[in-house]
Image: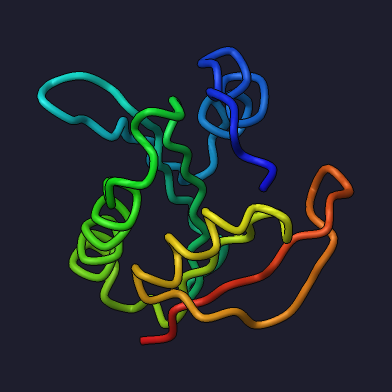
Length: 130
C-alpha cells in the first residue's frame, strides 16, 4: 500500500492551497478528534450538479480507526443538505491507495473507472449518485 507515511501539512498546502485560495467554490475543513486536527477534507463545486472531494488522514496512527469513513459520511450529508440540487459526488484516489479506496467504499462511493489524475497518476474515479 502506498499510504504508510504521515502526510505533512506542507504537502496538503502544496497540493490544495491554490484551489483553496482561488475564487472558485472550495469548502475546506479539518477533521478533528478530541479537538485535535487529524486530517483534512474539502469539497469543491465542479458544476451545478457535481461536487468533487479530497481528503487525508494525516498521521499513520490515526488510520484504520474509521475516522476517515465517518468524516466522509458526515461530509456527504452536509453537502446533500447545503446543495440539494447536486446529483453526483466524486473522489479519485490513486489506484494503489487501497486503504483510501476501502474508506471511500465504506462511505458509499462506488468505483467507476480508472483515470489519469491532475498530476499524471493513475486514479480510480469513485462516485455517489443521488
